[in-house]
Image (cartoon, rainbow, N blue to C red; front, side, top):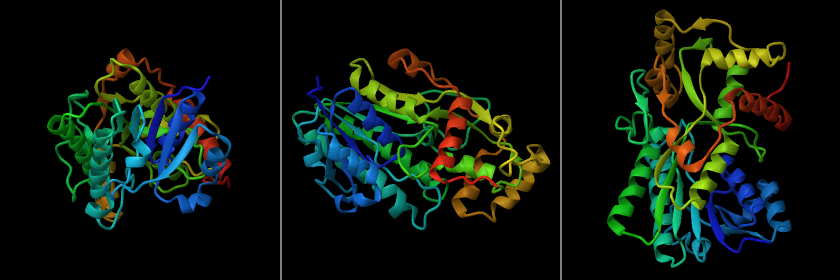
Length: 348
């Protein structure tokens, strides 16, 4: 029996959003998805084909920067999952390309929800970028932590995610809408893609495998599989007791451990895995000097993350939402096979 509740998902062409809509459709929900241009659906054939054969999915044209653009998509929906936001590290104009779409887009979606008499919950896709932009090995991050360091000049992507989430909470405080807000803060998202495009984290893994990195750097990340992220969004929408922010990450891995996983997976024979150890003080100093030759924001990311171990407590999302995280090793190896299948990685 189809679930008669309609759920709006913004930015359905995205890596996370595509898994969210598939999960919702499998559960029988009606889904109203937003895309920027309906006239360009031929560029995302999987979505056009899905909408053509599934009566539970309707697509709407919406622009993050256009006021009232989300009204039709939101109208009649029980909940809204807002995922649409730029995820790019290097841009020409951080304010125009990152900050404005993230903040104004979030405000436009929330205002459309406020005007609706049906929306009871909004789930916002935020990021670890809104929690920190320079991990401190001595601090265990929780939902109480906020990124207070980023700016348009320092890690502007992190800044856009921080300001968008802060804007959402300020909206709730000042406008007192009839709905409540739950926020998911994923870390580095891996796993198979439902679309031909590759997400940023998987592309980072590709770069590690194809010689883009000069060696093994003193970097570590928290990883989470995209299917677990999608499940977290749906559970946050469904569970009445869900509240506040949720750090969404499973295992943390050092780059050395990531390379070891790839080597154990048998990829050393077919790809150029890094061997040079640049994790010591001298190596990190060299990498920091080399970072100034990289694109501006990539260089800034390296300088603010090298040598810092990210530590975090994911107990809240496990306790409240019952999310069970796949092992990072499993997800990373699936990501590699998926990129090979899509043609993003070519064996030598």
